[in-house]
Length: 196
Image (cartoon, rainbow, N blue to C red; front, side, top):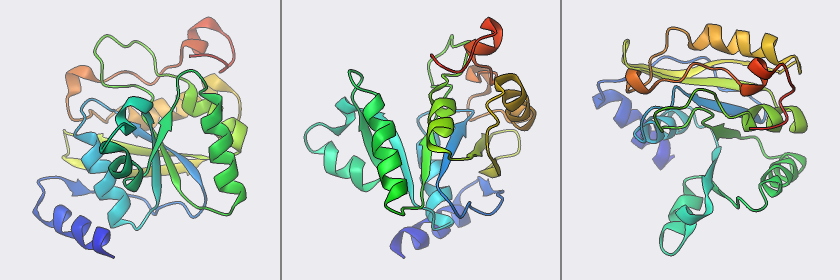
C-alpha cells in the first residue's frame, strides 16, 4: 500500500509519464531497456509499485554486502554469484513452483558504452523456465516509461529478436547516445542462444 502511494506521488510530480499495458498475471521475464542509466532503476520501481507488481532483479553479489544487503533484498534484489550463475535459474524455478507471481527484471544491454550486443541471459532464462517476456521501456523522446507487450519466446532467435527490435526501435532510453540495438551475438554467429 505504501509503495503504491509513493509511486502515485512520483508519477504525479515527475516530468515522466506512465504509458503502459496491463501488468502480466503470471511470472514473466521483464526486460528493462534501453538501459542507459542507473536512474532507470528508479523508473522501474515506480512502474512496478504503481501497478502493484512484485518484481525481482538480478545484481552482482558485491551489491549485497554489509548494510546494503537487506535494503537490496527488500527492493527485490537477487544476488548473482558469477562463479555459479546457474543457481539463479534454479532459484527462479523454485519460486515459480511455489506459486509466486513476479516479474524478473533483466537489463540485457547494460549501461557500459561500447556494447554491440545484448546479453542472452534473459533469453535462456525465459526458455528454461517457460516464462514469457514482458518488454519494459524508457523513452526520453516522449518522456514515457512503462510496460509493452508480454509474449512467449518461440526458440527461433532471429524471429523473436526481430519482434523485440521492432518494439524498441523508437525507444531511446534516458541517454540515447548509449542505446544498444537489441541484437544477440548468436544472431550474427548463426548459433543458438546458449552463450553470452
